[in-house]
Amino acid sequence: MRAAAVMSDLMLFSKIDAAASAAGAKLVRVDSVDELADAVVFDLILVDWNERSPTWASRLADRADTQSRVLLFGRHTDLAAHQAARDAGLGPMWARSRLVGHLGELFAGVR
Image (tube, rainbow, N blue to C red):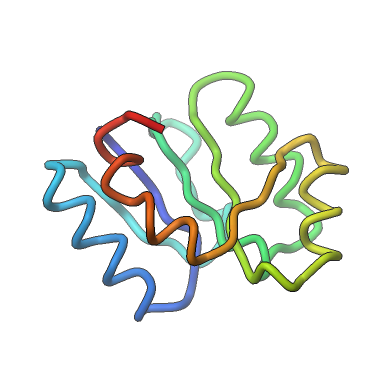
């Protein structure tokens, strides 16, 4: 499995990276969706939606339609972010705690 994490939180990234390594997945971290190389196909793209910029929704929608599973996550209390995810057709957005609890399954391709 080839995966990308779009996030700046290095503490959370270390948990994601450990789960990816345990599952034998290749994981890259970038700060922005715009940094994802268009030529690279990812099976899974994890995105900290609380860090989003206006260009992200359309770039992620293109990826989700053609090649990748896109999973947005963020603070469960950020209702504006949850609504923005639904409006972009990319929701639902997962809470960070749910993401962490399901990392093994995500990298095993179960969820």
